Length: 254
Image 1: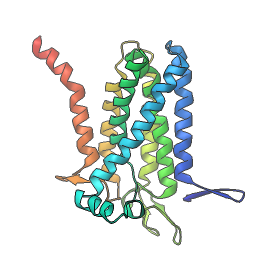
Image 2 (image 1 turned 90 degrees about the vertical axis):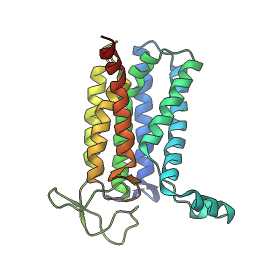
Image 3 (image 1 turned 30 degrees about the horizontal axis):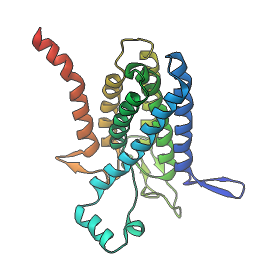
Image 4 (image 1 turned 45 degrees about the horizontal axis):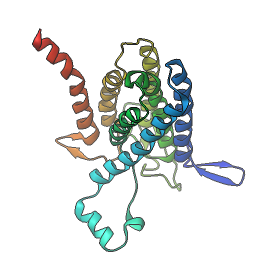
């Protein structure tokens, strides 16, 4: 692994390259699938772009909320040091929630059925996410705990990793999650063949348990924590509970 990819005399950040590749792959997949569900390409591209932009902003905003106190943010702004001292980062669930809300609003703007939209778009999301995790692996962020009972990966010394401690065998949490995300993507592609499938519910029920488990393998500390669980674990549990509420209400009425 290496934080930079070298192409001739050009050095590109590996994280940015894999994130960009994930965006391109998921966009192409989404546009291809949109034709199958009778969605015009320009409308699909509008929804995809809205979800992407708002998702990135939401992921960055959520990271800021869980990483910096209001006093720290105010101090940086007051001293005019925000751009110099602020260390950007992203929280996936923040991006997911903001992106989903933007996609729903954009679908209303272009008058596109939400169910058809979800069948085209949602199965592509895990593939973009998986490539992003590969980028995390190369950059050294979102790294795992010290490997004691799993084969570990060692980040070499004298390299600018984004947080990962060098010289210590670490659980390859990024690659484990990437593999699980590919499996989730394959399942959603199959589920999308059913016109009555609720892809958003299926996605949450598949990803939330995976992320809950993966958080126990993570070694990076800047993720927020409350009562022994991370911010992402609490958000995942809340979303998972919400997916069962409609079924519970139906059973109560019966």
